[in-house]
Length: 431
Ligand SMILES: [Zn+2]
Image (cartoon, rainbow, N blue to C red; front, side):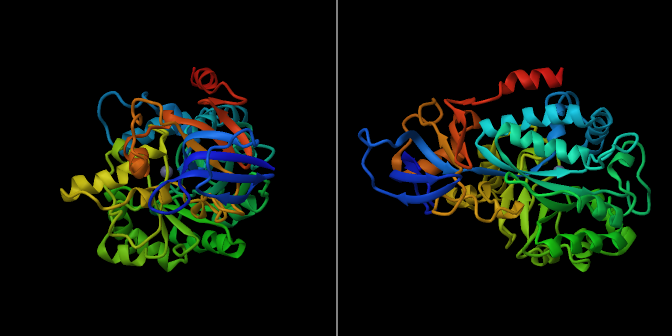
């Protein structure tokens, strides 16, 4: 049994509590007590600052981290950025990807992320690997090395557009058809730190007659099913032209919406799409959406639970993702106050969307994932105890995370990863 005493902690209400004692047995929280005076030599480890549950990064493509800065000179569009991303995908093999992903997941750990939903479609080499899941296994191993949990959202990707076969590096993403995708994905196994989910890359990349194979695979296993949805207007227009339906209609028709499903972006939706998505989780990736000039999704209009993802990793900072959901609404509506800080933190800690419904809260039975936000930096110094959640959501940055405990194990101490020199690893792999 390990006991932690948090100076302040968010245990689910609209404000932080002071003096919270958290007892951890193995990898789980055993007990939580509030209004506990500072411990005097009774063995509790002090966590100074604001303690949050582990943050969930529900949408990641680890290899996109390479493009940070390198695609930010000049202009272009989502589609020109995608060409750079494809050129990179061509160069990765399982060993290179494991090293890259370990560094990226290490950066996530430093940012307080204790679980990642890795939307994984980089399946094959120029020739098939001996282990057809070599790339997925590399990602699962990388997460373990970084000390975080992972949901490998194994992604079906079969086409370059409506009626068009995959071309160029997209051939490395494709299993041929959804049945072959399902056969390969079925060979993946859960591990203590890893669960397997499914993804439909998009309605562009999975032909309509293949969608229900992926949807059924996920439903039969009780696994999460993710899909990119309506990130770009061009996708909507092509989908309407090819099928007479919006992407949300098409996915709904093939069983790919519902409580176990998560639609990523959901930027350009009709009123009917918004109603159709009620009950389906939506993953907002605000820093990527603004980086790629996608547009602003209708976060407040959705009746969906929200989760958050750093997606292309233009930055990895869940505080920035959280506040951007509110701040984007402000820019659009010229009004403040659409989401409370607690609502935004619930989105930032939504593990159910990636298949860990027991995680994301500081309560008995939950995995012992504790993230301490230091109040010592110039950004948060002087924060008021009654408005700590607002200070954290609207002013904290990933660099303010000082301590991270994931599954009962300390992985970050005083702002440094316990086992990895993350910056050195990033420098080495990016070189
Ligand atoms: Zn994505």
